Amino acid sequence: MVARMHRSPCPRKGRTGRPRSVETDRAILDATRAALVDVGWGKLTMSEVAVRAGVAKTTLYRRWANKNELVVDAVAVLFDELELPDRGGLQADIEGVVLQFGALLARPETKTALMAVVAESTTDDALRERIRSAIVDRQKRLVLLGRERAQQRGELPPDTPGPEGALAASQAVGLIFDVIAGAIVHRTLVSAEPVDAAWAHQFSTLLLTGLGGLG
Image (cartoon, rainbow, N blue to C red; front, side, top):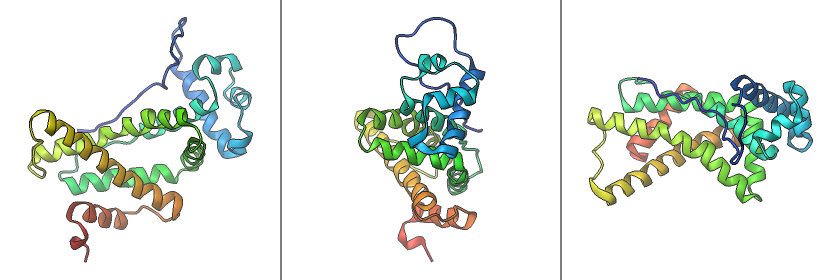
């Protein structure tokens, strides 16, 4: 089984009219990432994106209020490419998604766009919330599926029934996501080191067995 998510960019509320074109959305988001790589955050404008995408500027503003929202959605659709194929065991599943995540962050368009929006979000609460909802919360689906699959195999204990168990499970999913995503982002974007098979195996061993499992 493979978990893969295909989502349209977050729609603006209160808009009516003709249905949005998937092809137009894709062209705009592709143009946004390409422009970021070429000109950087400071020089990126909605007009620049419109020209590159071959659409009117009003088309952009019908979809996104500003470039912050646009860039977050341009990043989010890349993360929706991540999959969690069943590789037969929890450690193998973890290593598979870690390698995908590392490869995604190594792409110039992902790296440039993600670093730009994260930097801007340090002084923009609304942008930070959009990153959380459009990227972070959506990608926790991978942890949810991985835990469920491991529980079905008997590799992890089942969740405790009831509200307290549900809360504990939700907190565990958030922590697991933070640990995995944080480590990969730090290695690729801060340390500028590769996420290869050897590192993915060592990281998954640490995650599953703790420090004692590292030889």
